[in-house]
Length: 71
Image 1 (cartoon, rainbow, N blue to C red):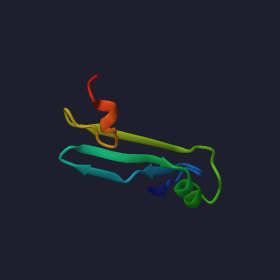
Image 2 (image 1 turned 60 degrees about the horizontal axis):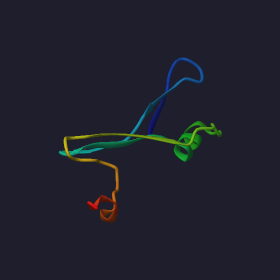
Image 3 (image 1 turned 45 degrees about the vertical axis):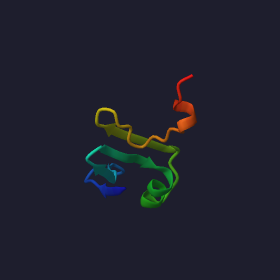
Image 4 (image 1 turned 90 degrees about the horizontal axis):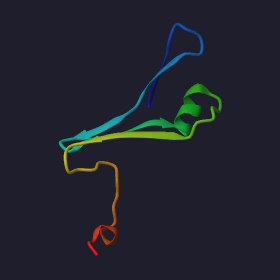
């Protein structure tokens, strides 16, 4: 996570690290620990993730084969 101060007091630009390949991408849009360290105080927000996948691909998801079997 890259955090950049702005000219406006207490306003920060937060840029997530994006992991991308031919299947799509995954990013952690917020991380509590990294944010608290960057601003030097605790802010009550836990974590938010975002992903985008190509057709028939689910990036960032884990599915156990037992759950996918047809009855």
